[in-house]
Length: 263
Image (cartoon, rainbow, N blue to C red; front, side, top):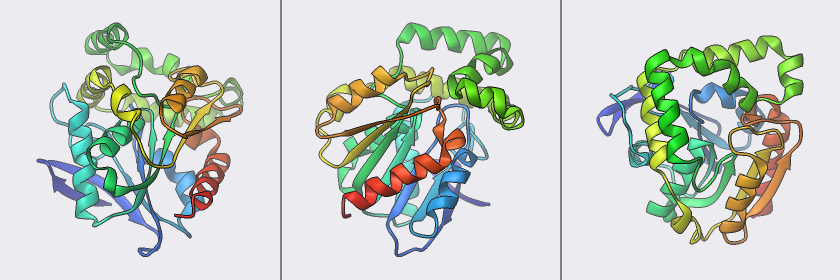
C-alpha cells in the first residue's frame, strides 16, 4: 500500500508497470475503490505504467466531511500526478471519474496525450435526483440503495451468473464511507462540463455498456458528440462498471485506442 498527504488529505494509490512506458491514470466511480480496475490493469501493466488511486471519501483515502466540490477531486488527482512526476498521460475516468477527467483536461490540458471517458457524461443526472439520493442515504444509509445500484452497475446476465462477484461488489458499495458517498454525490450534482468539453482538443474515446443504468447509451453518446472528433464505442452485455464484468474487452479497447493514436 502507498499513501501520500496532498491537498490536506491522504491519498491511497498504486503505481505499477514500467516507468518509461506511457502512463495510464485510472479514476474510479462513485461507491467504489481502485480495485475495480484490477483485471484491466493486469492486462495492461506489462506495456504501460498504471496509476490507480482512491478518490477522497472512498477506499483508504481520507474522508473529509461532506459536501465536496468536483474541484476538490480534480485537485487531488492533479496533486498526485505532480507528486508522481507524470506527464503526457492517458486518463481513464469511469462515471464521476469521467467528470474528474474532463475537469482536469479543462484546467491542465498540457498533461494529456489522450483520454478515455467510460460510462460518464458532461453532466450526470439533475439536481433533484442527486438531492433525493443525498436525503435517502443521510436518513437510511447506503444499504437501502445497494440492490438498485447493483442493477445499474451490472448487466442482467452478470447478476444471474456471477453471484459471488456480485456480492463482493455489493459489499464494496455498502462499506463506502457515508460521508464520502454523500460528499461525492454533491460534487457530481454541481458538476457541469458542457462548455469546456466542447473545447477538448485531444484524442478521446467514449465507452458505455449497453445495459448501463446510471449513464445510459444515449447519454454517453451525447457527450461523445459534444467533444470534437471523439470516438464512441458500445460494450455489449455490460452495465455501468464494465471494468469488472468486461475487463478483457475494455483492456483491448484501451490498448487499441492508445496504439491507434501513435502517442
